[in-house]
Every structure is written in structure tokens, then in C-alpha cells.
Length: 162
Image (cartoon, rainbow, N blue to C red):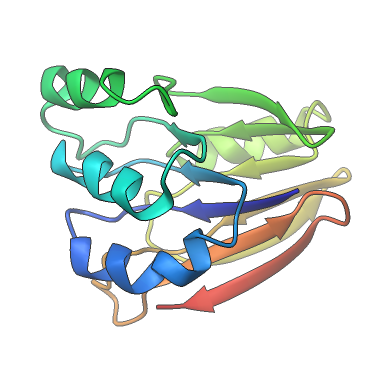
């Protein structure tokens, strides 16, 4: 199973549009927080169709009521709160927004893949047999917009520039 992982889009719908060919390759999309505005969910759903979209809260998701309402209007969208725990393609996955929490989740030995965002920094490491992954930022604040595709069968990670 191929999963797309992105984070910190910060309303940059133009980068989401540019990422469309990559996102459409995936069977499931994970967003590690900081959508910022509710319209980003609709743009993501318009881009990926009825593929499952899993989202966790980021520190800049400033309108939780509207974000929750928009998410609830799409059956393919799951808004998990601060931490998501998933099993996809036989892999145990956790997702949150913060690096410190992600590191602790990876160290727990309970997951095959832990994804996070927040610091806008692309990062990949192996901790106790777990892949710890920050796909970087979609926003482009630091000059580079990236996302990751993860093959859950092999845990191979492909970093893609948008």
C-alpha cells in the first residue's frame, strides 16, 4: 500500500494543486496538521477523490469548529484530534503534529511508522525498527515544498519536491 504523507500546508492550495499527481498515486493520504483553514480540506478532497484522508490537529489550525464541520461533510475524511493511531496495509502507524511526541511514539516500539510536522523540516530516521518521518512542509516558507510517499510493504520512503 502506498501512502502519501504531508504536513504544514498553511493554506497553500497552489502547492496542493502542484502535488496532485503525487497525491493521486497514493491509496491513503495522511496530513500531519497545520491545514490552517477549513477550505484546505475541500481542496485536498477535490484533489484525491474518495481516497481516505486522515488529519491530526496542528498548532495553527485556528478554526476547529469550521474545520470539524467541513471534515464531517466528507465520508472519506477522518479528523483524529491530536494523535492518530492507524493500521494500514498491515503497518502500525501513528501520526501527530509535534516532533517531541513523535519521537516518544517511535521509541515505544508500538509502531512501524510515525509521522509528524510542525518544524517544517524534512526528517527521516529509524528508531527501534520504526520509521520516524517528517515529510517537510507543503507551505514553502523555507523555500522547499515536499511530501513523502511511503510504501508500507517495504517502508521505502520517497521524498518529492513540489
